[in-house]
Each structure stands twice: as structure tokens, then as C-alpha cells.
Image (cartoon, rainbow, N blue to C red):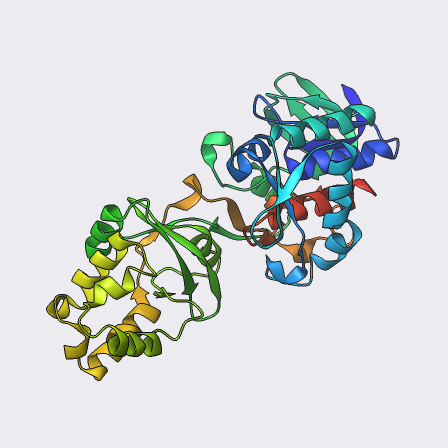
Amino acid sequence: MSYFDVVVLGGGAAGLMCAITAGQRGRRVLVLEGSNRVGKKILMSGGGRCNFTNLHCKPENFISKNPRFCISALSRYTQWDFIEMVQRHGIAYHEKTAGQLFCNESSKQIVAMLLAECSAAKVEIQTSSVVDDISCNGHYQIDCEGGSYECESLVIATGGLSIPKMGASDFGYKLARQFDLNVLDTRAALVPFTFTGVLHELATRLSGVSTAANVATDSMSFAENILFTHRGLSGPAALQISSYWTPGEALTIDLFPGTAIADHLQKQKRQRPKSVLRTVLIDSLPRALVIELQALLWPQQAETPLAEIPDDSLRQIAGELSAWSVRPAGTEGYRTAEVTMGGIDTGELSSKTLEARRQKGLYCIGEVVDVTGHLGGFNFQWAWASGYAAGLVA
């Protein structure tokens, strides 16, 4: 039986940050990772360049049953704190859309940085460690295939259900329930939509076509790019709105965000009376998309010059273009979801320390907790911040 002050279950972003912070306090820390290497999600993120945080990180960028829960951790370990670590390790980075920060070279640099910090803090890491049983009798005992460990503080940093091919499982939720913590229903978030029928056929033909759009539910909207896929709809705007969408709900897509399209078409009617509608729209939208929309929305007027289209009809077409209603059949699910919504109820945890209120020495951090960020580096910032908060006290 080996003794540690802190055992962290999960070697992802939150788990490694917690281990580093606790190790820097002189705690003897062990990280148990079930897969064959740590930081797998970090490595694949951002197209291999890791969108490691966002310059504009605010509590409003997070979804939770308790929206205020994330404030304490996010205010004590900010995006600027993580950026300082990145700079200290000489990792070059750049800003992309709306404050998103990416490595210039590779996400491997972020993992290497975290491992270097772990080494400096004398953190021990064991990969391919499958946990068989965990019990608590004053101290926590963790039985693995390779041995048993005892610790004062146990940290659940096992992540959610997203991307099971990378080893995601419900282990963290089961463990929380074992210690009588309430676990909220989970679902895939930041995930592409799927279509059936006519919409599926349309999306398949448009697969690979991208355009700017505003995508909305009744409660929220996002103005970014959308991307048609052979299954349905993806791209940043679609992924963002998926976190707010409920099954059966329609999405409203504005293909001319920020443009009074009805006025624009009337102007084109005056200036280019002999042109057909698709010719005018191809100036602003991908040609393939215009052709599909023409067949779907105004097939009878496909070859009619603008001058001959009644104003009422033109306004109706403009309305369709600015409020195109599509009803997804569902989403691609955990297989491609970037994160998992729901999870361990924040009501069970201290917002300051992430320790379970009714189970001394048990901490829950990262994606396993009911805090889900928007697309753009926010979920990594929650991982760093929650890991740091627990690491300060575990």
C-alpha cells in the first residue's frame, strides 16, 4: 500500500492543473490516468493547436444549473494566469476569432508544459491505471490492477462522456453517486446536428459548404459560421447553439446577419432589374447554397427577372433567407461532442474549493461538474481554474 496526500483520478487538463498546484504546496501527489497517456483531449483540441483559453473569459460564457457557481474559481485563476505560464515556457501563440488563443505550433507544447510543471512539483503520474474499487474509512483507498493507494484527499477529474473512443466513460459520475453526491442528467454539447428527409439530402449535397449565419433557438443566438456536413449542420454557430437546443425544437437561421435583406433585394430590383435572384444572392452566399435554396424556397421564380417579381413575393423570400426554419432530427451525440453538459450537481460542492460539502476530502473538478463553457477556449479555462482551486487546498 502506497500513501499519498492527494490522488487525482484523471490526467486531463483539470487533473494535471490540480496536481501541479497541490504539488507546489509540498503535497505528495499521484495522478492516475486510465488511458495510455495524459492530456489526450488537449492534444486533439483546436485542430492540434489547442485553443487553451480565451481573452474574454467571463461567467456569462458558462452554462450551469447554478450560473454563479463558476465565478469564484474563474476569478482566482484567470486567463491571464494561464497565459503567464504559457509565456514562461516560451510557447508562441496567436489570437483567432473573438479572443481565442491557439499555439502557433502544436498542442503537444501545452501537454509538455504541464508535464514539466508536474515534474518540478514532484507529482507522480501513472498511465493505464484501471481503478477496480474505491473506499473511504477515514482515508481513501484506491485499488487498481497495478496496486493499492491510500490518500487523504481524492480528486475526481475524470471528464465527461464526450468522445468515447478516447476513453471517456461515466466512471466519475458513478463514483460521485457512490459517495451520495447528486448527479444531474447529462447530454452532448458543442455537437453537430443531424437532419433527416429533405434537409438531410440538402445537407449531403452541400457537404463542405460554409457561410456566415446567425443561428437561434427561442432563448439564445450565435452569429458565426455554419458548415454543412453529410449528416447535417456543424460549424461554430451550430456547435454553440447545440448547448441551448432541446430535442424537437426548430432552429432559425439568418443567412444575412446584420443585413436588412428585404431592403437589399428591393435595391437590387431597382439597380439590376433584368437579373434573376440567384445572380444577386451569389454575390453574398456560396453558389451551391443559393442553388439549393432556390429549389427549396422560390422554384417558380427561378428564372424570373427581379423586375417581374412582385414586392410581396420578394419580401417573403427575404423573410425565408433571414429566418430559415430547420428542425434537426437530433445531434451526433457523445461520439463527436466537444463537451458533456450536466454532471455532478454544483449544489454538492464548495464553489471556493470544489470540495464535496458532505464528503470531506473529496473534490470534483473540470468537465465532470455541471459547468459547461461556450466554444472558444472557455472549457479549458474552467479546467485550469477549477483544478487550481482544488489544488490550493487538497
